[in-house]
Length: 199
Image 1 (cartoon, rainbow, N blue to C red):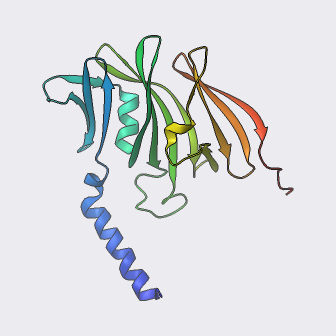
Image 2: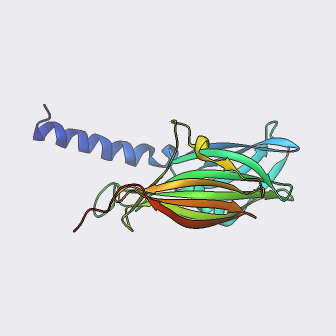
Image 3: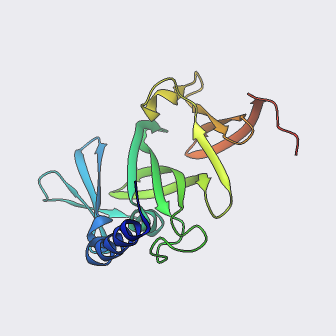
């Protein structure tokens, strides 16, 4: 059983660990496959870089995408596909709600989840669109509806060349369909999975 003294010691250990290792703990890596190479995108020491597997050829990461990577502590590549013959990457990214809070205060230990659409064109990775999936700051909680533990299982290819998936609002069970078409998210409410609870 945790006593107050143990909790206090644990808190100070976590505080010390964050001070000592916080900067390096945010380092991350993405492997993105493009027609000509396998590109390693990393964030370390506050800088984002992208190079091929042999570290001979560098690529450009747009400022908007780099900003997300710098803040994030989890990055997951859900899927890669082509839209108008150009590689597109569907990425789930988790960021702290208040990066400088040290885990204290309102939403200090909370997080923001974004779905990102990243496009590769002419040696540049560009953030085409983003969708806020979960937010402590905005009290928003949604998740991708899927039949397994793999996020990519929820993504479906349509006959018109677009992709779609369903997300569920946790509080009320409202389901929405998100279509990815021409590098943008298009959202439509489709049903209520569970009845709303009267307030």
